[in-house]
Amino acid sequence: MTVVKEMLKERVRRVQVHDYVQKKTTRAGFGGLSIQRTPLGTHVRIAAERPGLVIGRKGSDIQKLTEELERKFGYENLQVEAGEVNNFALNPLIMAAKVANALERGWNYRRAGNSMLQRIMDSGARGCQITIAGKLTGLRHRTEKFLSGHIKFCGETALELMDVGIAQAKLKPGTIGVKVAIMHPDAKLPDEIEVTPLPVPVVEVKEETTEDNKKEAAEDIKEQKVEDKKEKKAEAAEDTKEQKVEDKKEKKAEAAKETKEQKVEDKKEKKGDDK
Image (tube, rainbow, N blue to C red; front, side, top):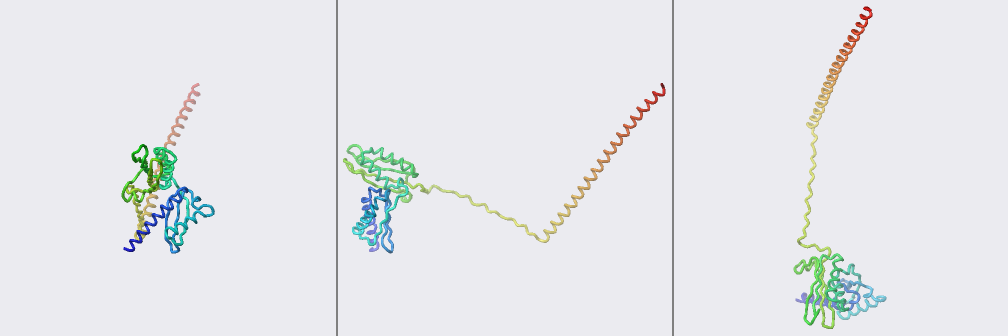
């Protein structure tokens, strides 16, 4: 039981550190923190929209925060580091604080919810839900929800893919709670399945070059050559036959022409003799 108690005590202390740092760095746009225990001590990294306000002039503010955490929560060799949030529009803690700040400045809850919702979706989020609860209009408590995109409400999918941030807006009628839940842009839902086609195996057929195959190939080549020679001889014989026929036709035509001319000359000679 002592191990369980120590784990619970550490969890409670981390939650208290988270709330304390969030209150101290509200103006800088608190975006979360991570606590890591190392052999040399404890390392705390604060993510903020404007880390310069967390560090302060010449590191005075972050040094003061480190001393307060060591004194209040009993950390030894504490190292506090401040870093900038990559895309603050996808950080639910920062966006919840912005909605609460807008409500405190007098914005209508519909305008604040819709404008922040559009800003989050334009940054590439797959889904977002903004819940504003409290005395919005009148004396009775109301809850308004602004939804867009794909939202998961329960189960392991909601725990893994949804980031949740909470903030409070303190107004004259009372405190208004703001809750922002954002689904990651690269979130992959369980029903999104990619079917990759199986690669078709390429089978290489290698012919075995044995002596029998070599002999068969040589015989095939020999037969092909013989057939080629026969075809050439047949073509040559056909050509010579056709040439002889044409020569005979030409000779007959020439002989007929000559006999015709001879007859014409003979007729002319007979006519001359008669005169």
